[in-house]
Image 1 (cartoon, rainbow, N blue to C red):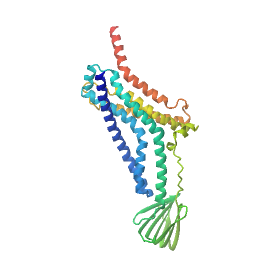
Image 2: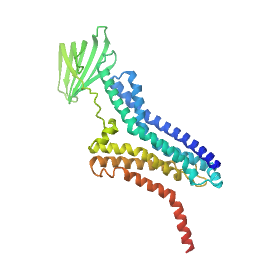
Image 3: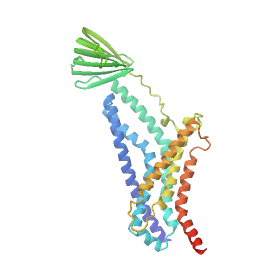
Image 4: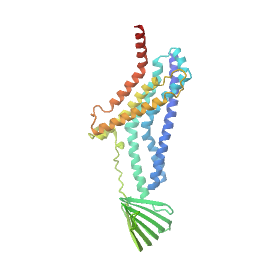
Length: 366
């Protein structure tokens, strides 16, 4: 019993270290892509710098519900693969270690991770998404109401897109050497002015630019027909989209509201959130027999199989969520069929070799 406990602790430590390493690497990769997206939106909409890091942090919580299951699968495969490749598993099996000693550490870790993942996907991730959307709206509002800076392009628009550039900005807010481009469908208007003033209405939805002593070019790009107008004063109004703090994103809805809803899309989202911890348990069940290596196989020999299984599992779950939202699959079935299919695959991997050996011996006896 003491030997089994020592072996279980050793295996558990190996699996936890591998799981944390894989999860960390995958999270960094996903966040690198998210950082690029956040920085692009921040540059386009003039987000305050203080809000950018907070948006990135909230995005990491949303990614964890996807990263944790695949990280656990790969962590178990890598940890057990090293034990098989270094002949440590062969020594443990020779000393009498059985399936209980092999599965117990992974089962314990999987239960703890699944419990944490359930809290993450059902409670924390929706709250983080709602907070991220509200923060994004606040950042967009702050950026749209910010004063125009010299030497930087500023975009506006709701229907009619506009880009403004001012070479200089005086202390009283007067803009110098102004460039303004407006795009309304195929029609493009470019205005150049020596100076301009900028004002914003009380509701913050309309920017009023008054340009002085300049020229305006109007026409369709690629067409020889255009018009040049010289003006002493030209007033331009720029509308920006209304911002609301009401969270409308489905992923930001609370689990309680999804549970009480009869809308198909919202019910599909509820099934998706419940499927994440179940996916974690099923993948952990599959990972142990999947990581078994033949002699002279490298420790990474089964990693590509694990990645393929996860992508199949994830795509099945994604397809099932779409079918629930469209009414193709009854809600009572939900996403349980995806878990059953992968669980049967796990049982086939676990019990298949033994059944084949028994069938082979019986055929030889005949």
